[in-house]
Image (tube, rainbow, N blue to C red; front, side, top):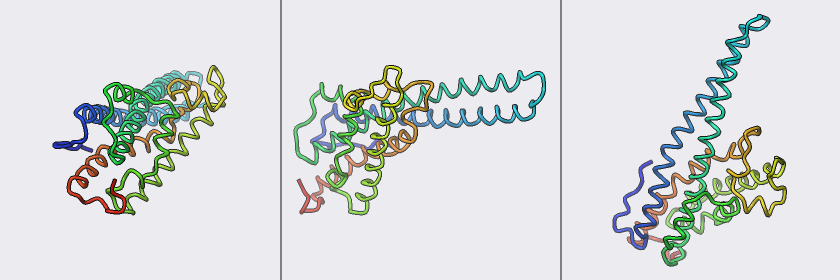
Length: 235
């Protein structure tokens, strides 16, 4: 998805636009690489399975042994790319929601220090707080069907983030069990190589959700300049 043209984008600042663009294009490449890493892991797993079948009962198992190691390498790469994608996807989600929320609320532009911080991986609590804002409060330039569709996506993401905290509490190995500490921490701090990635089932939907965010900001600005926001909800 192309990054929108924010020409005459006031009240967006140049730095806000640059931050949105930087994370957006980064995620485009990381999403493609993550999809490739997933496909590689699945392919290596199948190769390993097939090799184990035809060498079953034989004395020499070099082929399945090698493919087992190959699968481990692919799995490690997938996890690494996934964590990298999570770091930028979670940041892009919080940044874009924060910017759209401040535009809709007619609040001052974000400071350079705030933007710099928002471009870093957020805590799970910061991500939860961003996802707690209903889409009906943000997508006011869209019709009700559009809002409802994205509201369902938002709720699913919020439930998944809550699930991350629940799963992290059972890891041990230096990961806190207290909910307060978990919400104050970052997913990449808690993820462990010997468990399923904490982002499993969440990263894909989050990437899809946040990819649309710059378009929603652009659409709001266009409708606002055209005076096309619904009167009863116009800020």
